[in-house]
Length: 120
Image 1 (spheres, rainbow, N blue to C red):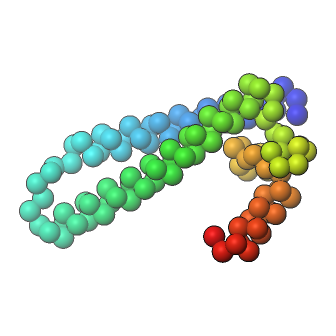
Image 2 (tube, rainbow, N blue to C red):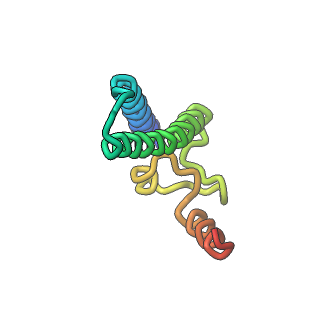
């Protein structure tokens, strides 16, 4: 992978990180502006359900943020695009689809098959 490709992936990862930060800020703003006193039980249940859904999404985004930081660290180390499983190159198409990928498609497929066989 050349420097141009690495720079493009770095920019893509930084854009993803910024989008997550913006979403978190928006969620915090919405939660803090919502009125705490909603007399109708149905409306209150809807608000609580929506808030729970938003918090689950933010939890997933937090995990993605960790993966983004790890990928940015691999770029700085010079190990980005190298499979953690076999040490081979991760294909550009795979990285374009999932820039935080740590495994090549073959190793990821084997991992998923093993997880499925173990009943996860």
